[in-house]
Every structure is written in structure tokens, then in C-alpha cells.
Length: 224
Image (tube, rainbow, N blue to C red; front, side, top):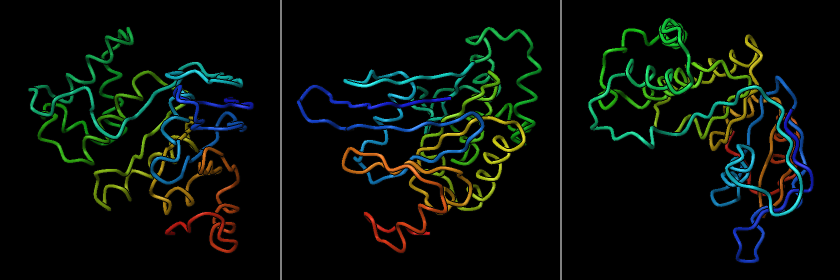
């Protein structure tokens, strides 16, 4: 379970980026965090991950292991000569996982075992996304957080990616949290939506989100 209670956050300039945020994400839920650029989505996720501390309020995190899937390999130069297998093996060592067969299992789950000896810099956006997910799954997380998973990948890759993310939630019981700009997939797969705007967070089901934004025109209409 993840709980935000009366959470406020400022970077120290006196202006609150987030104000009085209250929500609960229960174990096994699929939640999408949406909102315009600059609305505070990234700040909210950094608070969720513990990378930032709230200025006021309380955050409770109950998980065994949380994994984060960024938009891209931010810490890895695409020109660096490292293979897919080596990337996962390095992370396996960081997690102190002794069994190397976990790498093959994760690559097989993403159907990219045949890419194991390919250089990261030679992969497409969709292939890189799968490698990052495989890396995240190495640690057998119970919470998995994605930062705009469809960024930089083509539509066929998106059509393959989102059902897989959904299967991680439905079949394996992993709690999924995605920061989204792709509202079409968000409302289709997520159970819950957290819409961030003007420092506040509006929490509802995906069905309520579509009805409210399309029919009552609260904020800007999503493209669904």
C-alpha cells in the first residue's frame, strides 16, 4: 500500500508545487498519473520513490521491493559498447542475485532473448524499453513504476507493450504505477487515475476520468 496524506511540496522558493495531496494506492492496483507538462507529475513520483521528502504531510510506503523503469537509459551512453546481457548481468550483481538463470527468464518473458548479445546502442526504442523492463523484473518487484512508457517507441511497439504491462498486474499481481501522456492506453488499462493540475491531485477510476473530462470538461479534454 502507498499512502499520501496532506502532502505539500515546495523546492524552497515559497511556491508549492503540490498542495494537500491525498490518495491511496492499494496492493495489486494499476494506477496512471496524468496531467499536463509541468503540472507536478514528476515531483509526485519522486516523492513516491523517496527521492524527495514532503515539505508537509505524510507518505507511507509498504512494499518489499520497488522497481523503476525510466523513459530511457539515462545513465548509459548509447555509444558505450555494452550488450543487453551485460546490462542485465551488472544489475544482477547490484541486487546480489546469485542465480544467472534469472537473466534468461526475464529476457524470455519479454521475448528478447535473441537480443542478448546485441549492443544497447544498436537497439530500437521499443527494444530498449523491453530491456529496461527486463532489468526491472530481475529483482522480482511487487511495485513497478514506469515513466511515460510509450515515449520514443512506435505504435506497434506500444500495442505490444501495454498488454504486457497489464499482464504483469493481472497475472503476477504486481502493483503498476505509470506516469502517462498516452491517455488512450492509460484509460484502457488503468484501474485508477491520478490527475495532477495546478498543484492538486484528482483521484478517480478510469471510467470516471473519461466521463468527467469528456462530458463535464474539467481541465483539458484528453485525446481518447
